[in-house]
Image (cartoon, rainbow, N blue to C red; front, side):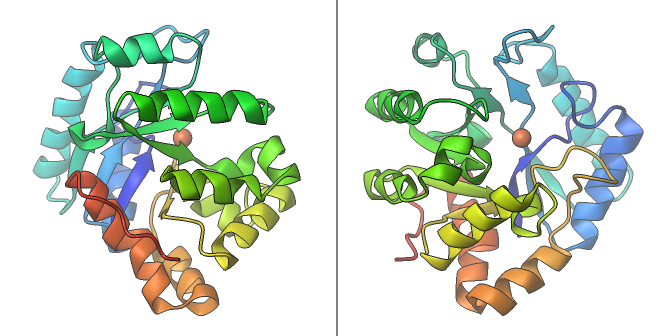
Length: 245
Ligand SMILES: [Fe+2]
C-alpha cells in the first residue's frame, strides 16, 4: 500500500518532531503493509518560518531521512512531496516551479483553511488544473463548507480533481462532522485515495492496518484496494487514476 500524505519529514512542520519520531513512524507504516510514503510537509503556510519550497533546506532533511530509514533496515520507500496551502500566490509559485508536487509528478496535494469559502476553493482548483497540474484535494471532509454542502464533491469529481480522504476522519478520530462527510463521500464512490495525514506516533498515526479492514468491511475489498493501493501507486507513477464510479 502507498500513503501519499504523511508529515514524516522531521523538524519541517507540526509533524515528526525529531528523526527518532520519523523512524518510529516509518516502522509503524511498514509494519502495517505500507511500502511507500510520500513525505508531505506543510508548504506555503502564511506564518511559517520556512515555506518548504523546492530549494529549501528540506531537500537535505529528505535525503537524510531516506538514509536513516535504510540504515535502520525498514523496508519503506520515501518519496518527496508537500501539502501546499492554497493562497493567492499559489498559482504564481506553481508557474515558477517552486512548489513540490507529489513524487515529482503532475499531481499537487493542496489544502485550504477549514473555514474557507467554497467558491474560493473551486476557483483555486480550476486555476491549478488550468496550469496542467492535477489537484489532489487533501481531506475535503474536514472543510466546513463541504460538511454543509457535501454534494459539491461530485462537481470536483466530475472535473477530474482527486479526492483524498483522511484515515482519522473515516475512523472517527477527527470529529463527527468529518466522519459523517467522509462516510457520505465513500458511500457514493466519490473518493479516489485515502491517506494517513499522520503527524506523530500517538494521535495522528501512520499505518493502514485498522483502516484497511474498516474499508474492506464497509465498502468492499475492491474499492479498498483502489483507495489504498492502486490509485496512490498511479499517482506515484504519474499515471491517470482510477475512477470508482
Ligand atoms: Fe496534512
